Length: 115
Image (cartoon, rainbow, N blue to C red; front, side, top):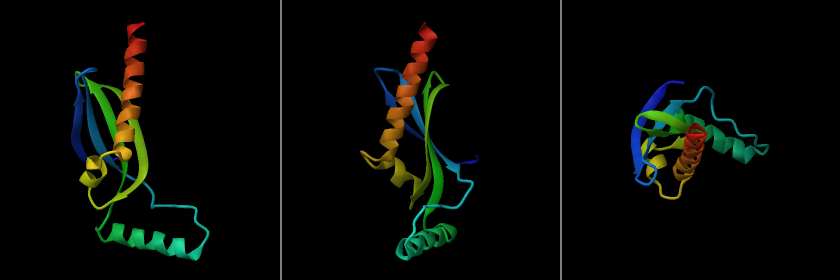
């Protein structure tokens, strides 16, 4: 998947991990398994707004690194936002969950390497 956007997110002093956000190109259009007509109309509205550039559609990736080495990753697909910053600057949002998941994977990797 092609990287569309990259941003430094944060540094965790106690673990010395850095976190990076990458917006990756999604390979398919948004698909939600909705049966009713009203929701299908909403889905088509989103697709139109993505196509005309009002919204961005991407797979979010958060990478946990230590000394430049990738130790953990977390992904969330089918993200639809007006900007990448809206995704990663929202406190308590999905990006925070990805940071926590990437951090947990990185700490597990470090634990295994120390054995």
